[in-house]
Length: 279
Image (cartoon, rainbow, N blue to C red; front, side, top):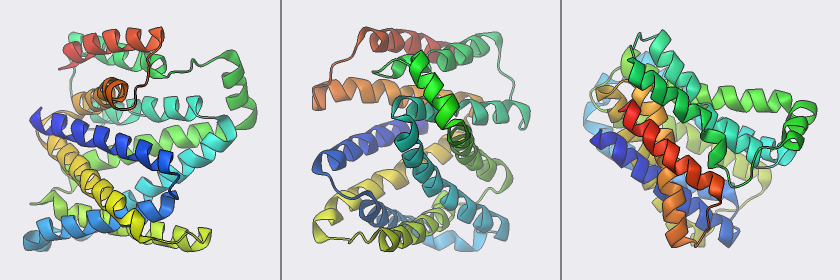
C-alpha cells in the first residue's frame, strides 16, 4: 500500500503542475518533450546496472506502452474539442474498470463480497466527481457527434493502464526503470515529432516545469508498477483512481482556492467508503 500511496501523491503533483502550465498558457508538446526527456534520463540512470534483464518482449512492450501513453493524451485532446470537458474526463476515469476486470478475469484475482461492493460503489460514483454534471444534452452530444471518439478514449486509457499489469505479470524484470527507459524514450520521440509538426519551439523558460513534471511522471509510474507487483490489480486500479480524485480535489481547495459543489462532497464521502471496502 505504501507504493500505491506514493504513486497517488506523485500523480496529484502532476495534476497541479498541469494546472500551473494551463494558467501560464505554455504550449503542451514542448513541455511534454522536456518532461519525457527528463523521465528517460532519470530512468536510464536508475536502471542502468540491470539492462541485461530487459528481454525483447519487455522492450517491445515498452515501445507499445510509450505509444499508448502519448496517444491516449492526443485522443483525449481531440475528444475535448468534440465533446467538451465533462464527458472525456468522466470516460477517462471510468476506463479504470477495464484493467480492474482484466486483473480479475485474465489474471484470476478473486475479490470477496466486500471488495465487490466497494468496486461497484467506486465506479458508480465517478460521474459525481465532476464539477459539472453529465446532462441529457452532454450525452446527446456524445452520441451524435463523438460516439466513436468516446469509445476510443475509454478503450485506449483502459488498455494503457492494463499494459502495466501485463509487464509486471508477463515480462517481469529486475528493475522497472529499465522498462520505463524504453517507455519514456518512445514518448519523447513522439512528443519531439509533434513539436515539429505543430511548429512549437522548446524554450528555456519551459525547462524547469518540464523537468519537474518528468521527475514526478517517472516516480508516479515507477511506484505504480511496484504497487502492482505487491498488490492485486483489482485493488490498485480503483484505489489509485479514487485516491487521485480525492486528493486532487482537497488540495485544489487549498492551492487554487477551488470550491466544491454538493455533488463533489457526496462523491468524497462515498469514495471514502468505497476505499475502506476495497482495501
